[in-house]
Length: 304
Image (cartoon, rainbow, N blue to C red; front, side, top):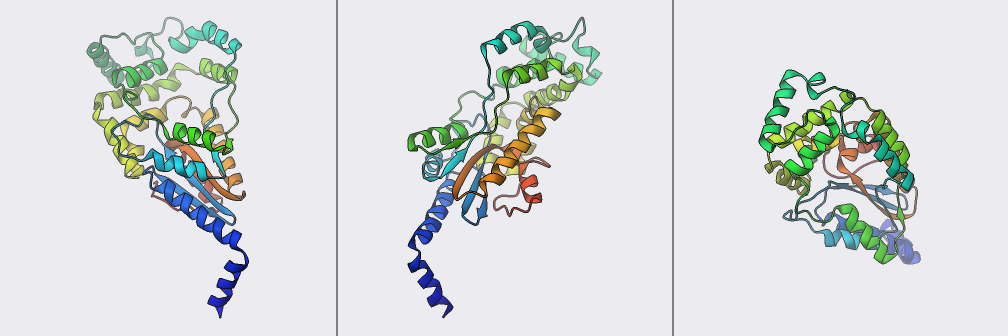
């Protein structure tokens, strides 16, 4: 009798049955892309959380076309915000450039680093024929990661780019967290004490010392959904230790924005596909931990 009643309910409400099938199909298609992701089943649909890393090597065997298909079929997508810079912010950067790019007054790296850290930095300076002594630690860290380790060379589209293009073509609504004003970002960066960026420099040195093998290893772990492996990779550690992620004020706001938007999406009808930086999702007390603490049941790979 229960089976007959269930069949009757499906026949009586074919629209509901079709929606369930479509929702499941979108989730399965997204999962087949190979990117690590989590799902939250909701009373009226599902939320798909795609864990993004930046600068995925072209050699990484994932299937972005599957993610495109899922994005085009979703009811909405959520993507990271872009900073909002104005012409006035460019002038502010020019005038504040010394505070952002150089150590203050007549100080040098040895005034802030331990003897061991300064020795490691000196070895990298000799290796790459560069002088970091007066350069700000954040700029030195970025130089090590982007120019010496060259982690973003020969890469494919990030998941955000894949989803954005697919959603635009299919007229799927795109939602983003509130954008930070360029003025606020520059003020935050200019006001930071040099010592606050020492951990970033230390992590960037560790990643650079480890060599380019960590780039492929990080991407391979990402493709295998080995989330703890990605999070422990020296490159991912360095990227997550540097501004703005490690800044208490900006970092907290970023995580709260994502948590709030995903919780809101769980109350919406249909399927929401959100592309979220993996470090923001999977870190300790990150977005996945926060959502779980709110009572959401999350399906997907282990993130701890």
